[in-house]
Length: 223
Image (cartoon, rainbow, N blue to C red; front, side):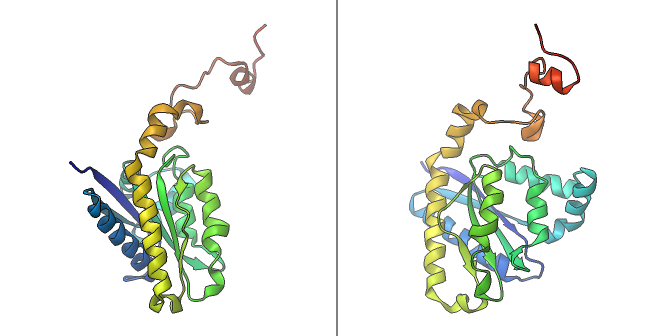
């Protein structure tokens, strides 16, 4: 019997419709189809960051997580795979996109498979995914698929884009269905560096009585 998987699309497109959302939707559609061929089921949830813009800004300056933003974070926590798509502004991923991922708990996305995608009006920005976005997701300790997706205006009529979408979707399905994330969390979680209270407040196993923690609190080391 096939398994059910949850795919989450994060789109930073600011218009409705947007090419950024369109690219992400095409990836998600291929993921659902390819998983179906393996007798697996994929359900897709979309997080539109433009609808969360005010709560994201508030979280940046106050650390307060609003209700809609908390729902998005919870959705990501339960994701088996992620498609993260952003428009390119001034040779970089949008501020809305980077701000959202910067406010996430550092442990939230460990080992989750991710497809990175970007759109722009010109091919001059084609390296943004590999040059800028991969670093952010490496810091979050995700598993980014090898194929980067970028679509400039002229790419939408190019069959090469379809081939890259197909390849990225296949890579994501392979990672989602392999059980890699579950293996890491079940067998290797303790070997990662965590912050106290991270992972949604569940990481509480840090030794507060170590020499390092006593020094940080202004005390001395044990004799």
